[in-house]
Length: 625
Image (tube, rainbow, N blue to C red; front, side, top):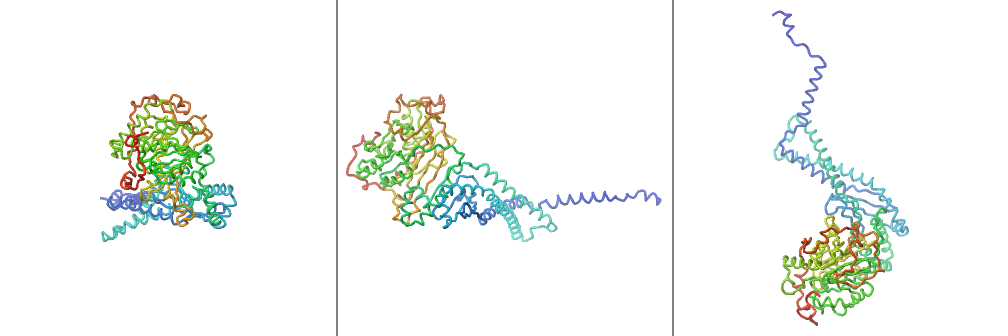
């Protein structure tokens, strides 16, 4: 082959542009295949990601906790710290006098804790400023919210990033120790740096997006409508007259209390955009006194809350013996009902003779399948069909028997009703019976009241979108009874009725012992009281309705009477054909189950300790009156 032919077969020299493109393509392949390809098993990669994410969340919680937000609001220095634990979620205002707690803000277990510095200057500002201080404090605190959110969001992001990096390094360290080698393969340093950066960024972004999405989806704009107060703050807020006594004993301490109370007022005042009607009057709900001398103590709460009506859902006695209603005990009830009327229904621990004895007390109205017009409300009450200690089904504690007896009694209690009657409040001692009657009657019931189970129902159960009526289940106002032992709190509630007959708010008290909140017992004062506040959503009632103390309390009439006000006049709800059906066409589906709270302890301890100086006529007097 000639030299010229050989030269013609040699490949042409690559151009500079072609060489650059080939090198660039090689770099891209290396970057994709080497820097972002994990040289480890999928399970190890999954463990690395999970550990990094958990470490990121833990470090974020630490970051928001140790890096507080400090500011001055209305000349009061405050410190806001964060927490990420389910037990401390929501917004709290903490002071040495007690706590104000808003727990129902979002499902995310994030807590913001405001601690005001109540020094001499703050006390002067609060006590001298009056309503102006309250308004200024709330307004300025709202102005600080954007910077507060940015502060804690920044701390959370830094914590997430640092935590994700720590988690990744922990996995590398574990691999190194367990495998006795460098977890980073030879020649893959760039890959590990890129992979670590990707992991940290991904964990941080996913955690932030997940938390923000959950918080946004579960955020409740009406969170301010549910809060709790504890400590000395609750003692004073519940019974304001105590502040005057404290002022006489220690004026400096009283001024400090006033300062914190003004802060509480600023934080719990409803927004100006709400259309909550003025309060016409307040109703006290009590139950399951079980013959404990608590009425003299309740008087100060009646006075402090301007209570105009008391509703008692039964179990006044322990074993249904009228001897339990001693002269002094009846006098303590009479002193209250002389000025504040009481509506009472029989519980399963009350006999027929106990019901008749209660009806003899001036100011006490006993209902049993009767309706009473009370200050603009229409209230229906039914006595309990069971009697504690009675033979047969009437005294049984078996859950199935109790459910059957209560459900049958519920159907019987409504079968003779005027089917167009509208009830503002339906009363039964046991929740299972109240729920069965409300289920049967449908939208003609606005609210039910009951007791029996010795515990108030959860706040979330008070008003639910799953049903039309409000559910008010009261705890034991008698702390489980005269002979009961343990730490059962004394529970009762204050229900506010608006001038348009809407139920606007309920305050639910839980007190450690009625003997403790006494200024002469300084070592216990401030550790006794706690209460929750809940605002109700308006119900669809007639716009022309009015409620007033001036309407007074009428005489009870049988629920089948034709002169009862009809639902069309009392409510904007249009009753369906099902709601107007006869009771046997509807099968009640009780929400609750039978719960004989307290019965076992009473049966075990009553014995000879029960008053026996008089006996009930037997056995017919132990039936329903």
